[in-house]
Length: 315
Ligand SMILES: [Zn+2]
Image (cartoon, rainbow, N blue to C red; front, side):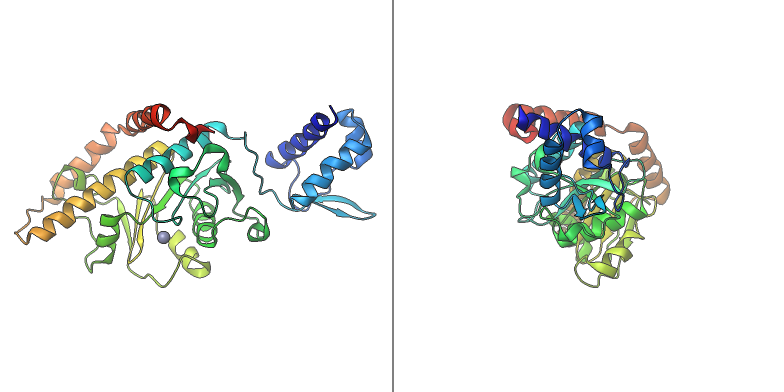
């Protein structure tokens, strides 16, 4: 019973931090106030605060009170629907060989401004990521990398800069799939409209031609300003990033972009003259893709396959 009460206090404080009722630097109510409010003993409140202090969420200033140190929380059951979608995206990206070792990162915003987002934890292979593994990050929390559950440094730098500077980009998928990365390494990094898939990306790709090292610090900030309203950022000499309002849409863009790159690179490899369609046809077809939008149906089908074949992604 004591264990249960103590967890109730932790959940209450986590909820109030998550809803920004308690912000970083705020003093929370005193132990005796919380005791009265939650109708539990001061000893139980103290145990809960001990635990949250050990996890770097709260900090006691002796004689002054307890303040919120971090809102990087790993609340395993919060944002359940978002966690399921993002975990499914990791699992299917691995099936499509779009992962690279334990690098690469996907994120999904969970608050209105986009400053808080779910992200993969450091060191996990895409194929083993489950819903509860995803960590909750605050792009404005400069203390993030000191936390015990700190993410990969490039994941933190790239995704926090992108979510801060692109609130419309709720879901951001960054990977180094083979053919997109080959196209990113060519002098001409443009997606030529040579088939129906490649036409989907006509005038919808931002291209970065100024790679200057791993996505850390100023490089991450620079990258975050290049996306604009496009769903794809071709990261020159590096890889690709897709961004959209939902995981389903961002995944659909990533899937079709890699397929398009495969077709274009294959066409280049034939050495034959390539027929690039007119701007007019490419533009019209790109708009038809937008109107057609089967991303939700596509992602629902992928989740049905995972539900049957590897349901542990939902854990
Ligand atoms: Zn990368």
